[in-house]
Amino acid sequence: MGNANQSILKHTVVLQKRAIRTICKVQYNSHTEPLFKNLTILKIKDQFEYEITLFMNKYKQNKLPSSFDKNFSYNPEIQNRLTIRL
Image 1 (cartoon, rainbow, N blue to C red):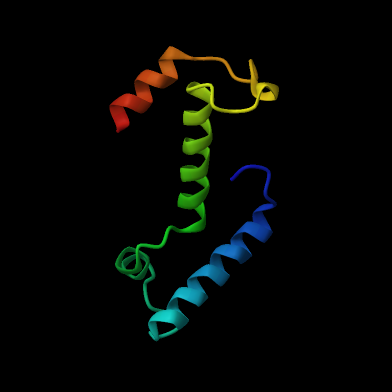
Image 2 (image 1 turned 60 degrees about the vertical axis):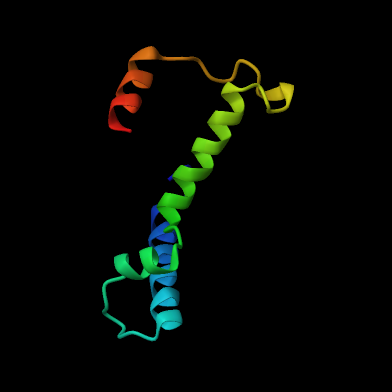
């Protein structure tokens, strides 16, 4: 994700899983997917993707500072693939 160091990122994911297990008072090796869903908490990776989506949406609507103008280019091929996946 982004420019994050993979070992630091992995450690952060482990800490997030440990925290959600502690919050939910479950065993140390319980699956975390249902816990995240039940508490409506985004995983780190999902939060990153959400923030990127918000940023690009603001960019597309010209709601960012002018310093971001022309930093990105539109690629219809990618846009079509994203539309199909949604």
